[in-house]
Image 1 (cartoon, rainbow, N blue to C red):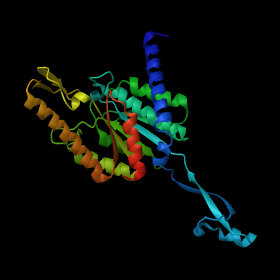
Image 2 (cartoon, one colour):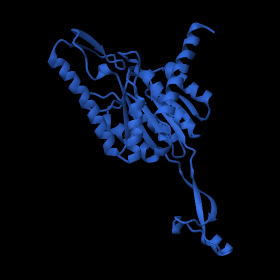
Image 3 (spheres, rainbow, N blue to C red):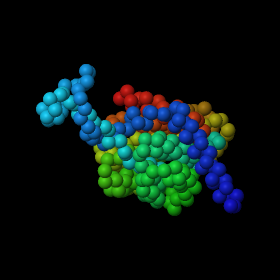
Image 4 (spheres, one colour):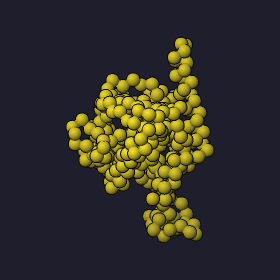
Length: 307
């Protein structure tokens, strides 16, 4: 086994250990309570017990046996979870010990192991300006380890992002209602619009998010790096848009320049959050280099309360 493969396996294993610990310690039971099955299946009729609801009485069995019986149901639990991960060029950025791509792998792993603990199937769609890799939903530890490996080491052929097209493709691929976890940095332009090759901006992307949420249970995981929110005073720096190649110089020694940079990024995040709230899509904000299990637990708690 060469060193590169050995390092890859170590990295996958490290993420597995860390995320499975998070699932066990912090998220146990939370996933099941917020992601419901498709409906209720009739299980059996049993004799009435004090406290049973009158409306659940099985009148046919009651008439036949002469004793009151009630119908019992079980949740049709098995779900399909499709994790869509944005691996456009901006995802490789990381100013801390972990890149946004590694954060995406940890988030995907946590969701996958939570789903596996509930007997659900998990699939993966890696996308840039379209789906570049599709792994159909399956069960099993080895399957999940493959998903982690692909998020960490898959080499995309393209650099740009097209969220709307990707969601359209996912909607065509998924024939039944599923949970769709969309992991991206959702980088926007100065006007607060999400990027897309047609230049129609946020309207097109938000329509795709809205449509997907109506067909499935959509949750957006918005990942970022600390330096995309604020920047230290280190003199003149050159910033390059990893997707478009556009280069901008910024004098970070200027307090007003740093403040303008921070306000711009805050405006982007707020505009996106308001857009999601308007169409009723749940979201989780995660930052590279910071523990995310706490934020995920807060999200599960909010969703359980219906907030």
